[in-house]
Image 1 (cartoon, helix red, strand yellow):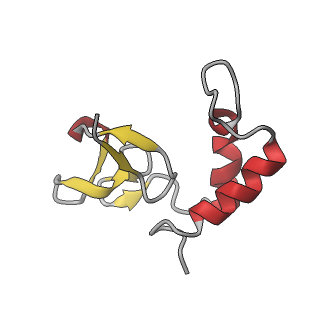
Image 2: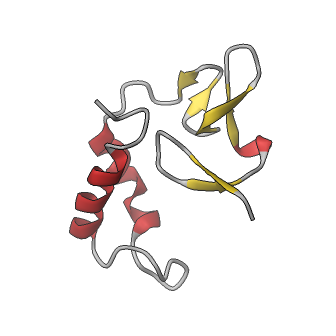
Length: 92
């Protein structure tokens, strides 16, 4: 199955237009998911990278449903910070 990577939250989604964000003109975003990009703007425009990482931690930790997840929250924070800094929204 083909996937796309949201350039804001770093999540992979199935290649499905209904999961992509929308631009101001109603077109589908090539870069962001529907949770991060709404009508041409970030869903949480003032959210920092650190805040986004914290909100995403529960879905990135190793569990029965996420066997390839990070082993603990501190490792996840370090690795997510490295990864997020490569995404369009967060790269400097």
